[in-house]
Length: 469
Ligand code: FHN
Image 1: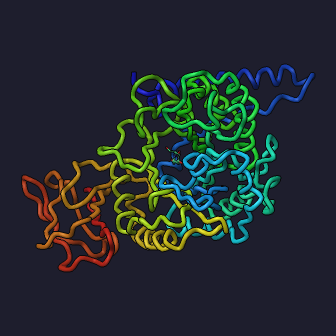
Image 2: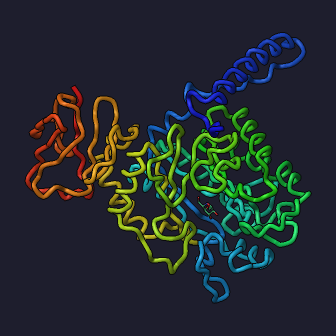
């Protein structure tokens, strides 16, 4: 059975809204009836018409992997990990007590929420997903269910998430939180036989204590995140693969979260929906509002559901001081276009340093992308997947009465073959030049040719607009 990921026609969303409206009606009735005995509970606000609207319009967001792992930055006691920076506790088998020492050293005095948020905004990103708690269990906010957090365990003692919430609110950026279900520190979340879970190394024994971690720690922390930081946009779960976390827990968590915050978007990793593949598992009924292919752009997108491809700029999510394998800004722009041409969102990662700075290499790339987005953002925001097959020279996106041709390879003869039925398009022009500079558009039975300007513009991916009649 197809995955019941939320979309406008999926039974789950129709059932959910029916359930919510009956629930709301009952709630209101009961509230009135008992008005004399107690103040009616505030009715659960209904999800907006479609909670995904802002997300589909946004198309482009910033992922931030930041935590204690930025201190070792890939190297602990002189030993380097060749894996992900944020996995160092696990890949170098650092005992919990030893790793915890990093908390007393976490003092990111150069952290400036306004700087990070305006960098995302100037890049053309519309939302920001930060690792509130990654697998190591350290909380970047003042959590009431643990001392292992930024306020109680570090000399920094500032609520990072609160500062980001203020900066996001001020700059019109949607703040979103990443939360890891897997927790290498909490005593009830450990594998039955080893201090940490490793993919595929769980011995199959059920960890009887895990439900307690789920109920008395994970849920209260999630409630803190969705209640204390204003109008957050997305709850981005991860680490769902641990065997002790069940699809029943996922469904329970999804229902509780969306019951409290009907407008909140939750990714498919709240459940077991991506098992076996990074994208969407078409088997079984899983909950979640969008699919999460990672470090890849699915060849033809993921049909029929919302999805977001998350990607690093080098090879690690969390900062590693010796990872210099940076993707070029041009490649990052082409990735963004590729994802949008298939109807997806692009979540591009930065891994700030222990001092609280986004690496210069990341900032340089973000500035270059921002320059491209300033000219061509119209072809990305609110766009939907190409109406045509992928052309040899680039990609298409579409929005309202326009098709956008993103030109990766400028034709030497200046003639761009475009898919079109005779008479489909009334005009063609370079987005950068505007409709006042129309180009010759010749239509034949087999398609159309646009005569491009003699020299390719300097832009990494020039965009041609084809306007429908
Ligand atoms: O294990 C994590 C990893 O550290 C990183 O957070 C990525 C980002 O999506 N998610 C998991 C791997 O799938």
